[in-house]
Amino acid sequence: MRALFVTSTRVGDAILSTGVLSRILEDNPGLKVTLACGPAAASLFEAMPGLERIIVLDKMLGSLHWLYLWAQTVGTRWDILVDLRNAPVTYLLGARKRYRLIRSRDGGHRIRTLSRVIGAENDPPAPRLWVDDARSKTAARLIPDGGPVLAIGPTANWRGKQWRSHSFAELIRRLTAPTGILPGARVAIFGRDDERPMALPVIESVPEDRLIDLVGHIDLLTVYACLGRASLYIGNDSGLMHLAAASGIPTLGLFGPSPAEQYAPWGNFCDHVQAAKGFDEIFPDDFDHRNTDTLMDSLSVDQAEDAANALWARARDAVV
Image 1: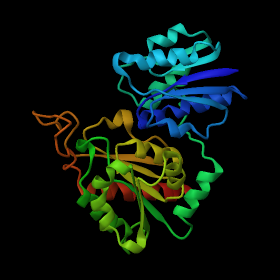
Image 2: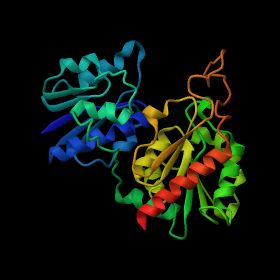
Image 3: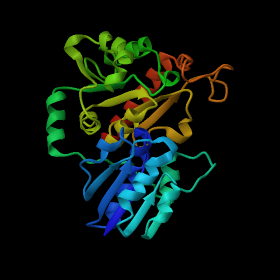
């Protein structure tokens, strides 16, 4: 059996879609999958079982990338076709079973919206990624055993969602202080290479002997493997946050100008903390995402610390 799975160009949405992909693989043993996604998300799927091919959809003028997808896939009669992009061109492909994203305005979590595609909204599958041995070994080298690790994601895909660096630095100081929940913990900083200027003030705030600087050094699946070796993740609403949640570690998302009810980290030991200014009032009158400064200033370090402490206690109590 062969399946075509069309997912998002954005890393975060692609990660959220992996629960649906995982459920389809579980329900169809031996399934061979061709996966279509944007270039930023492509590496997420490289170790997936049953992977035949990844079709990278670079956006083209006039939506010609969809014509490219059709040309690459029209010669196969698909047993299962899952289109989470609602691309009209996939109607032109032969498929025995066809699943398409159902648009909804109910405002529910994106995981439930995606799960509705396969009729699993009442039992939504959690995001899940697969890692090969080489990346697992790399992660063990980058984050060796030897005490707790606080993972931090200080960047975001636009400035408005990015908590200030000095707030991250103060939160790290409190959580890793002798009286904090992770006393003396190592601190791993994550981000893309082009986000290094955003992350640098946070990197420089961590004592060198406890710093694990992973900004821009590794691909997404290796990031995922590294996150799985951490004790707690705290970061802005971003693909990194969803990657941490998928890895299974306690994950705290920091939210302001994005809807947490739709994009909060998903998992038993995940939570979010919202800026005091509500989503409906957080945007200035002259808002322009290209030049507006952070909109996260109404989220205090005290709020974030309280949320981190509560999440850590909940995760710790579940293990005892």
